[in-house]
Length: 137
Image (cartoon, rainbow, N blue to C red):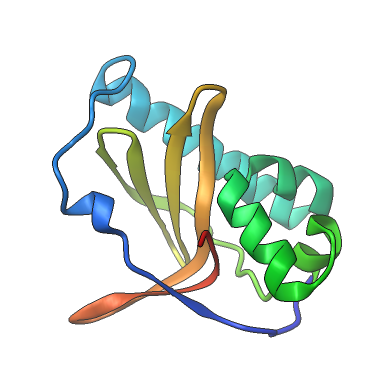
């Protein structure tokens, strides 16, 4: 699961837009987003491609399959996703979240069935959008 294939750029406009109403308190949403990021990291450590696909947002999964011309499990296994390590920061903006880890940043969105990863393998670029290995369209 450690081959470099392609990178994309994520413009996370929701972070600068007005906060949308969400369910639960900000603290609850922050905790739930962090839990989803921890699940993603655990699945990444165990090379569970099917599990990783289940945690991806629908558009992200579709974009990954389209770009790699393969089903999600094969496509995600071909990505160079870093193990993120410990959580340093969780920012929640309405139904959007950013989870900053040691060596990765994950972006998540809140769906009716919970938080889903919309972008992973993201690194900041000063003055520019994050560079992400996988992202939604």
